Image 1 (spheres, rainbow, N blue to C red):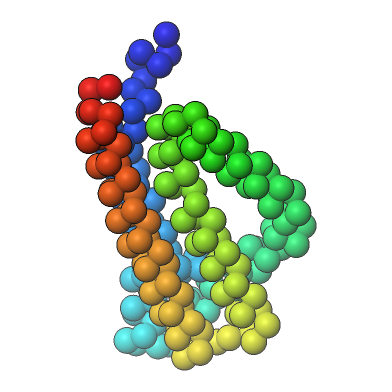
Image 2 (cartoon, rainbow, N blue to C red; image 1 turned 90 degrees about the horizontal axis):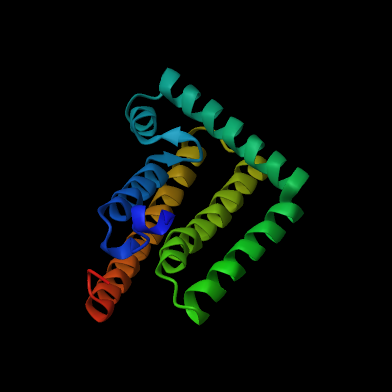
Length: 169
């Protein structure tokens, strides 16, 4: 009954594509907790925007590393369980909703790994100033590259699903 009201055909649903766009625009806008406009101001002006960028980046990195150190094992186990379950539902049973969730989740797992790696570099090297800005620039470029490939793959896979199964089921 609930599936009659809510359309589970994700790749032909406008809301899925809106969610995909919002997901990747948000992911590439906030890099290690620093909004892109603040990052650009820090590059241009220095001074207070640079100090704010440093503080935000260090707060985010400490927070992420704390969460990882306290619950990292549980988090890895849960994400492994979730990803494996979605893979079985998507590949073995061909459930489109699970395929769509995988198209969102798998690239985000890579983004999480990249965030963790960058956070460790910020903490290890106590990055500030130009070194921190250079890391943020490289990290944002990496996130945008992951997002570009994820959107491309999701678009191609979604079009394939709509063509082979038909838009109306």
